[in-house]
Length: 358
Image (cartoon, rainbow, N blue to C red):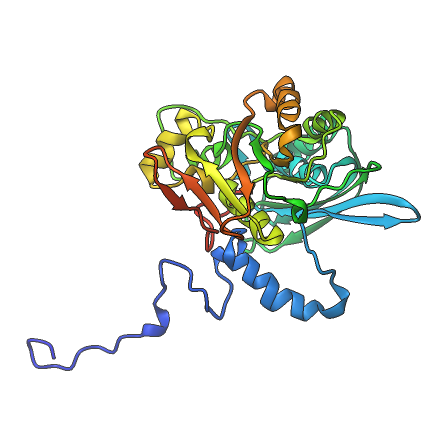
């Protein structure tokens, strides 16, 4: 009752919005697109039942299929990064490199891509031309051909300038068998370089945030680095580019798929000062921040030294490091040893620390 004796106004609780996405929300929330637990639940409980027997059992970033005797990797991805131009790149490079890297994580040599542009009515043609040129330049750099595509336009206010979808096909060489199910206790876990760079680069140009130093996105095609690793003759078990959800999400997915544990040494994670400072300011964990030009590798211990040496000889792997091991203990979990000598569980994120990052 108010002080004047009148009844309080009716509160419309239906209009309330929870600041964190609810796991049982009846509608799509941003967390469903974050590559974490909510994304997994959406696939497991909505898409797979809806697809039924038409879907394969393993819905991975890149599928390896055999057609007329040829082993091909196939992948598709959509890019909704905001803003479309960020320090170190644009949505154009991101789309090409993202699909090229998904193919490379199967050990494939990327060959051809499709491109689909979803454009918002009112977007400047000059902006579209800039992104299209970025797509073409990135495709040339990655030595892939753009062979088919599509263009759609949506009403003003129902898009965000430019969305891109790319799909790609690559050729998998004989004897190459790279998939998360092959992670084995004893495997050495490698990372190709500094983590968290892309996420901080994109975040730096949102809302005018400044971190005292310019952090550039690491977007790059990784198939050349993968080829250098395979040329060593090593039996590479798993490769993964830790994009949405960062290193933490990728390692959790591998651990759960193979039913193994992963033990990290947090002190060995290569986190550049700019990323560390930005994450400290914003309360983020670098292990959960997206990357677009880095890879994780699980390799047998007897092959680790030569694979690491090959990575460090490549420009995109110069800062490669050993960050942990695959273990039989705590299957399905990732555990990190901290700088203070303790341990902590590195869980799969529910949603996404930084939405619209790729």
